[in-house]
Length: 449
Image 1 (cartoon, rainbow, N blue to C red):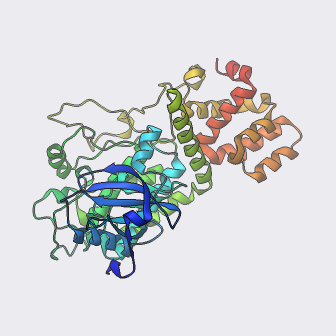
Image 2: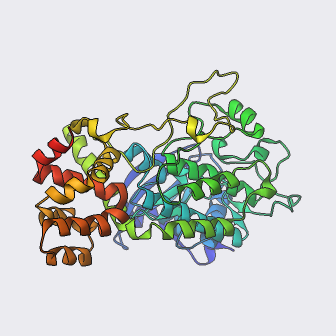
Image 3: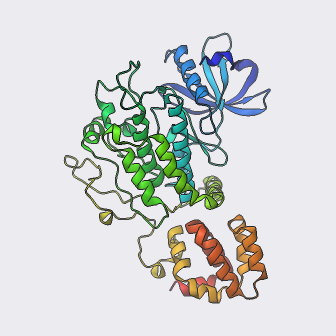
């Protein structure tokens, strides 16, 4: 497909202004700019001087255009800078950053509902790409961008190419094997390897691990060490499976994607079936999860100006890092270790929420407090309507109306537990705890002793 036949070539001098550098790499730089005529912001990928060719740039844009869908960043056209022939790709600007930047801003993983949606949307993007006869070949958190509502779209198709199945890998394919080495499958470290769709599936498995844990795989390990350990079956550390519905199945999908044998990895369509089923169980909580994240990010931005540190905690937490002998383990997870051997990393180490210092409680501790003190809270909380109003969109309108018609505070609290806390999970319970501490500080203190 020749993208130049239906895409506009723009002059940077005439149409683009207010350039801001978003990031740079070996390929070049990505900028945000304002399009004067369109009156909205766009992203621009521009190669460094002497890096790559104009043909490579057009090929990348053509792949993105061919894979154009709800889950791939949109291409608007090209630009040339002044009288020079330097060109770039003009693309949709994703205001939500990337999964990588989200992990950094949250200091960990996103809420479970959002994590399941991200997993599903990336699977949909990969499946659509593969059905178009393409593969991405560089799946990683920084290449999954987010819009205002934190919906995911794939970007950076610089390594994308025409794909083949794992059973037909003798086709001629040009170019070097790309991709970030921590997300590359074991077979990709072989000199004679020719990329196939199973490459993306393996990378997707590692990406799932990163989404759930909020961490980078094999931290501090260089290329040579990863190249040595991955073909031997070493993978990122096991995930401690907390009481999050569907997490066990998602971990199972993750592990099936990163098996050593390419032919044993599931097709993208199979991944979609699993992720769709899992996300459907959490879909009702997605608006609350997005609201929660945005509120946290806004709070962090505001506190950056006041130099006040902000602590974050989420339903998913990665296992505590273990210290291993470099020669024997190299910081990789031994596949034989059980989940019971892993320790859960939290902001406050405690198994008894009653004895936790109320000044240091994270969201998980707050949720445990709300769960374990259920009977006492139902009997003692009187400002139910005020608290429900403070929770805002976390309490659905129908639920709020039902609370209003109840005659006693005990009945109102039972409605909150049955209709809001049960489906809302950690996020809503933590918000309830904060509101409870505001309206009933003495009660919280008494119950926390």
